[in-house]
Length: 189
Image (cartoon, rainbow, N blue to C red; front, side):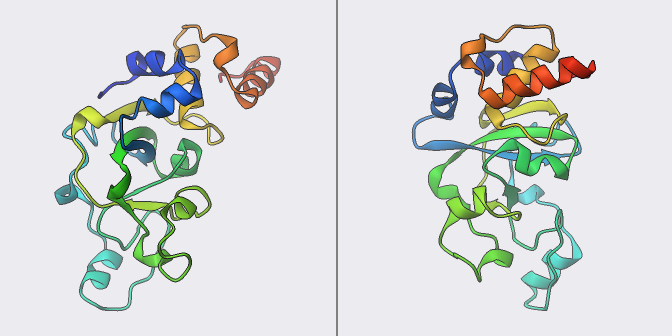
């Protein structure tokens, strides 16, 4: 599953429902933005979770302050849609994860502590991926260009930017409007 434009083309030419199903049985897509295109070349590995002062203090039982981009949980922070993660790095990744591998981060435990879906979609913190994920389940979606697209729309935009075609009936109304708006102004989508 590792990829870039080739996989974006595959995903762009399917419906949103088929894209969601492409994550695999018992799995779902989550998104993470990072600074390096090769960040997950060997998959998502808990041994490679970056260390920061807040995380070290939290693990030691000391007072720790959360800051966006510097979470205190042991795991990889992910969101339910690409646009939610886009401010945290220049490269976007779609990660197919088993449903049970996500948890609510420690800094969000005081509000809806068992509701991972709420935090994936409504919370600025997101959810915490707490298990290793093999490289075959990670798709490098390319450099982040827009902070308003879903994962499926991002794949479609990648294909269009690369000169490929996406059937219009598979595009969301939001993506069609984004393309129209960009063309009117002479902007890259």
